[in-house]
Amino acid sequence: MTTLKGCKEFCQRLSEYLDGEIGEHECRLIEAHLAECPPCALVYRSLCTTVEVCNKGVSCEIPDDVRQRLLQFLREHCDPGYAAKT
Image (cartoon, rainbow, N blue to C red; front, side):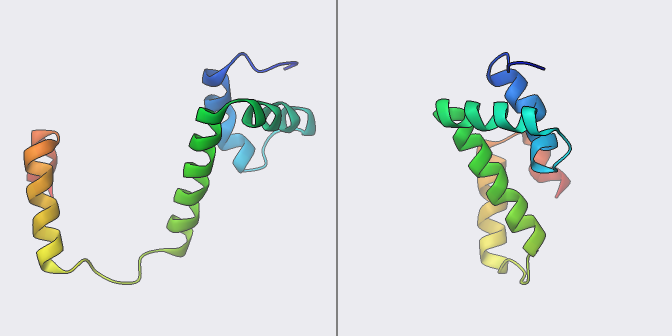
């Protein structure tokens, strides 16, 4: 690959980039795209944060009242089948 063909290709290669599975040239292309594209930079930062949080794990349970409010919100605003599955 000599250039990235836009945001779609960036997103397709992002996991490989984060996992260190691509070469130095491809890394430079992705880093150049990150420097030039604020939306993709936001996606990248969000994914890094998500990976960090997942790696740390959750050490406590959600309080019952918060869980109930969350389920109610999901029932009212999201896919009708989601809250029923939980």
